[in-house]
Length: 253
Length: 303
Image (tube, rainbow over all chains, first blue to last red; front, side):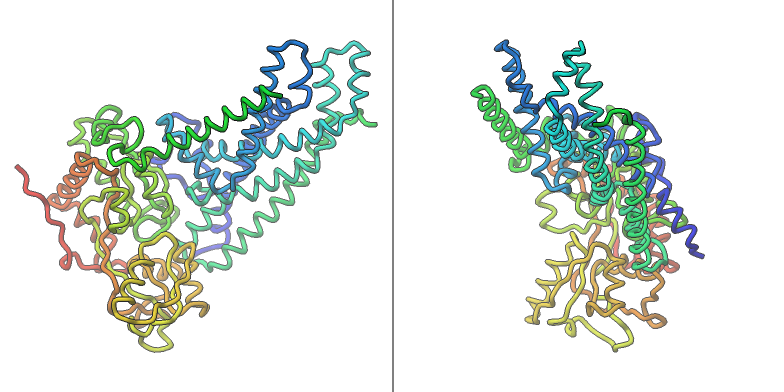
């Protein structure tokens, strides 16, 4: 009565979400799914948001930000940005992921009386998490950038912004590839911590399954382990491939 | 450089203040949660028509999956209460579920994130320090599940043995105080993430017994395919070391809201809807029958 196909489909797509759990104010594709699909959705979106956040934080924390300008006001803004970014990054990096998730699920309502769907909160928590780590990776990337290339760009008539977007970021992107892949896999696996706040991702669905269906506890654990392992491997290969496609190949030295 | 240090100091002070602001509500007796006066859950529902219920999804027969659908005693009670509530709120009430776990079911009621929590929560004095409870809407006891093949056991046999318990359940304190009062050697307690894991460990021989609310254990074991009782590999002790009263957790110091929940339960009892729902999950045909005649809800007199 309990087929392997049923088990796999539940692990992949999750259990159907009862209508009372769907908040009509938010997009339903974020709230209907579950299982591995939701794990992937959360990982993908939080890596994407984390990439933007992380790059912004890294730019705030560049050595240049705080010393470059001759204008005293600009220098002050630069220092403020530097400090804020540093405090944010260090705060998030110093928190265990379980605590970060509990805080993210608690604070929006506590402070602003804001009710958000579980998946939105999950993506927020993991975005901060990946953003903080990503900013360190991007910072290391900036450090690895040969400053003479910057002068070359300037001499060729590019503005500082063009140098950043057209030369610096594409080159360091390639340097950061292994670290980025690593982070994507870490976020993917750490998303299992979301089970403590009942986000219906893979681990939580497995927990629900062993409590509701005549299935061997060990078998479920084995299947979940297998799914994480296979997906993590696929993810690491895919991330490398896609990023290689995105980053222009002709820039090399 | 100096500006940077200044900003650092300011940000740190800001974080400490933020922490103070968040923590403040918890220590003060008067403040239920920031920005709220006590006793306004019902008026909030009256104004926006949303009833947010924290629902557990990991314990049969209270909230679990059957043919993929979320079913259970708590789920049915939540839907029935939302129906009754319309009379007291004087408007249409839309029921919204927020999934809670055993770790968050009390905390989110405290913070106001959910208006009530239906997650097979036992009424204990420790929990009453943080939230209020409705009148009991479910009754059970706590015995110890053991391997039947090794002979009949009673509670005293478990002195000094190893017993599995469910994490974040109230059974830990209860079993300790029961054994202490009897003057028996305390059993060594091992915590498990969920009931299924504990029952599996019991079958494997890692532990000598597993305990929590009888109905949850028996239902979980039966669903996992292990019969409990004469026909199966597992059995439950005849006596229980602690009675159990299940209550609806509601925010602290909100008497209007707690009264309303009690009235809803009483209305359901008087109309017979409660008995119908109860019979579905604890009646003679259920996996763990608990006869309603042994327990009774005493509705307050109307008028």
